[in-house]
Image 1 (cartoon, helix red, strand yellow):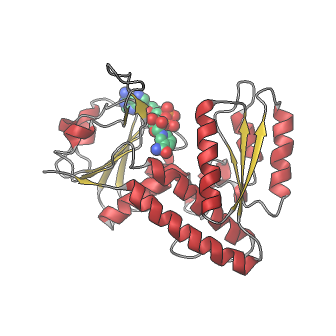
Image 2 (cartoon, protein in one colour; image 1 turned 90 degrees about the vertical axis):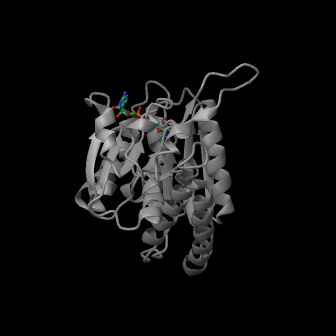
Length: 297
Ligand code: NAD
């Protein structure tokens, strides 16, 4: 069997196009553009790259992007004052504080200060709770993007066996919750799981979100399984390479011969994350204006 490659890049491009069209419709209906505020504290190089690409994507989708860059020695109070100001600003529909924050700032306290109705990352406990009890709120972008890819490929997930490897608050747990809502039978595997190959072997759907290069081996997979690889890992540079290759948590080359479908790294889940962030921001904008968000978002 040769797996179908799930093209997250193409799917994300289509989603961004739809968001762009709907953002235009929102501007007409509301008399203003939807707005996303991104807060970056410090100079972490990876965070700077993420913030820059979020800014570009927001503007390209026809929304306002407000960037707030604070120095690494910013104290928690200053950051909380900014978050409070953004909560009250009617031009701001979504607030994203780029993580990780410098040592000494309590991330949970900062997330808790964001209005749940502007928490487009879906990290606030109110949104985690809403997801747990099946109320509409904001779902973290990466697992929601994975879910879009899964339903696009498989349609109805009812009764399918799904194994999520990883139990973080931003990927593993919300992913499992979304799969449960879609009536899959779920198992969450983690660092203490016994006999992971056997657990993975019964899955129709495998979502790997661990952060360990090529940990999931091809011979663990059930024939025809759908594999969503969230991991992003850089290998040490091979001879002659300046930087090592980016790989996922799944042995992609091997798994291609066994799975029914698989996301590549890069070009699978990664591009979905920003596209869903734009989608969540636009949904927030509609809700903040008391309007019903369009169904195809
Ligand atoms: P995390 O470090 O918070 O969580 C990792 C999880 O893996 C933990 O729950 C842990 O129990 C589990 N784990 C660790 N070792 C294990 C083992 N040997 N067997 C089974 N489970 C094990 O990580 P995270 O934030 O959830 O991210 C996971 C990966 O996804 C990382 O590579 C990260 O870079 C990537 N990621 C990608 C995107 C994207 O946009 N594509 C977004 C978020 C995270």
